[in-house]
Structures are given as structure tokens and as C-alpha cells.
Amino acid sequence: MLSASSSHKTNEIAVSVRGLGLTYTTAIDRRPTLKARVKALGRGGKQTRTIRALDNVDLDVEYGQVLGVIGANGAGKSTLMRVIAGILPPSQGRIEVFGSVSTLLALGVGFNPSMSGRDNVFLGGLAAGMSREEIENNFAEIAEFSELGDAIDAPMRTYSSGMYARLAFSVAATVRPDILIVDEALSTGDAKFKEKSLNRIKELRSDDRALILVSHAMATLRDVCNDVVWIHKGKVIQRGEPNIVIDAYQEFLQVGKSAAIDEDV
Ligand SMILES: Nc1ncnc2c1ncn2[C@@H]1O[C@H](COP(=O)(O)OP(=O)(O)O)[C@@H](O)[C@H]1O
Ligand SMILES: [Mg+2]
Image 1: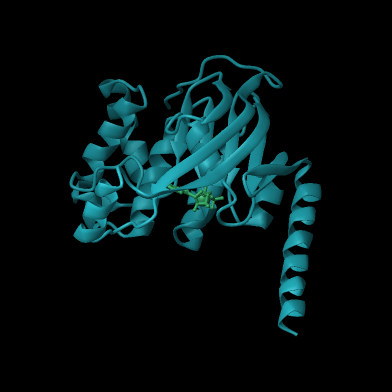
Image 2: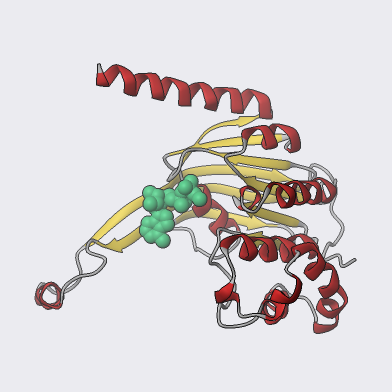
């Protein structure tokens, strides 16, 4: 088995986030007509809209922690993961990562769809800092875990989202990084693969590893995590013992529902 890990101890900081802010700037019209574009040029530029996805976030993740990240859609969870993974530079604040990071982000990141699953494993492994030999030594395990069979040699554009997710999970979980980020990938795939992935996550729990799991599967998070953080509208609402934070979040969801019903009356 490959281990990208150097030596870390429980309670040592793996990720430190201070005063983190992230603002997306997007064009207002995603598909402007030629006429609108000419007009915009005439005005000296594009019309833009800004979205404050993260606002003054402070967060430490320690080695030995299995941190669940919860919150409504659009809360900023994936943005936070992308910043920790170094894919997005912060607009404000500071982020420090002490160790190797492997990320299993939302589908569509990291793979080249015109290449086969096999070639993508090599490409992804090299990008993650593995040598060709290390990848070769781990390829059989990755392919077997993915359950793709002969499809491993088919172009990834022919894969279903489930096949895609299975390969992505297999790669990320085989690299055995110091810090593993899994964004929603535990809820894809069939029940059997979900269980297998969950078991792998449990195996990866270790004093010298930090796991960060973004998920809507509250029962799973209660089961595997030893810490949970709740994000809402780009801010940390609560952080702590999984049952306490998840109970608070679920109560908040219930209140939201009844408030919506009251408004209807
Ligand atoms: N690439 C992007 N460009 C512009 N806005 C984005 C982009 N990605 C996310 N957002 C916006 O940022 C906010 C947080 O999104 P995201 O981090 O994906 O939340 P979550 O993962 O919690 O659902 C949302 O309002 C979302 O619409
Ligand atoms: Mg997300």
C-alpha cells in the first residue's frame, strides 16, 4: 500500500484557516447576445455580480480529527474545500496546510473526459505527486476498488456519474494522504459501493491523518466523525461534538420548514 504520509501526531494542526473570505465575481448574463456584449464593451467592460461565498471563516483541523462539514446548499462548503485544497485563492485571510492533501471534490474536477480511466489514474496520480512506479504498484488496487472492470480502458466521457465517482473515490482513498477531503462523493453510487467507501473512510481514520467530509448524510456523519462544523451563508455557525452540532442543524431545518408553512397560511 502506498502512503504519502509523513509523520504527524494527534492534536497537531493539519489545516489552519483565519479570517478567510472568498468573493466570486461573475458576469450577470451567462450567455449574452452579441448585441449585449457589444453594448457592454461600449460601457467599457462586463456587468458583474459578486457573491460572498465565505465570510471571515476561522477553522482549525487537527490530525486525528474526522471533521464533518454540514450546511444547506449554497452555504459555502465546497468553496471552503476548494480553498483548503489550494484550487481557489482566498480573497481575504490566510490558510495554512501542514501535510499532503488529496481531494475528492464534486464531480467534474480533475479528470480529462477524453482519456480512459486508466490514463486518468496515472495523470491524477502524477499530479498528486506520486511517481509512475508508485502508481503502477497501486493501479491494481485502485482498479479493483472502482469495480469498473473493462470500462477502466474506455474514455471517461462514456462513464455514468456513478462510475466517475467510483473511480475518483478509489484514487483519492488509495493515495492515503495526510489530509483527505471528500466533498459529497460518499452519497453517490449504489448502496453497496456507498458502504464500501464508508468502510474505507473508517480504515483511513488515524491519529496521523485528518479527514474532512462534506455530506448531507447526517447518520453517516454521526457514525464516522469526531467533530462537525456547520456552515451557513459563508459563516461558521457552530463547531463541536457531532451529535450536538447535527441536532442543532436539524432543528434549524425543522424550524425553517415550519416557518415556511406559517408563511403559506
Ligand atoms: N464558480 C462559482 N462562480 C460563482 N458563484 C459560485 C461559484 N461556485 C459557487 N458559487 C456560489 O457561492 C455560494 C457557495 O457555493 P458552494 O461553495 O458551492 O456551496 P455548497 O457547497 O455549500 O453548496 C453559492 O451562492 C454559489 O452559488
Ligand atoms: Mg457543495
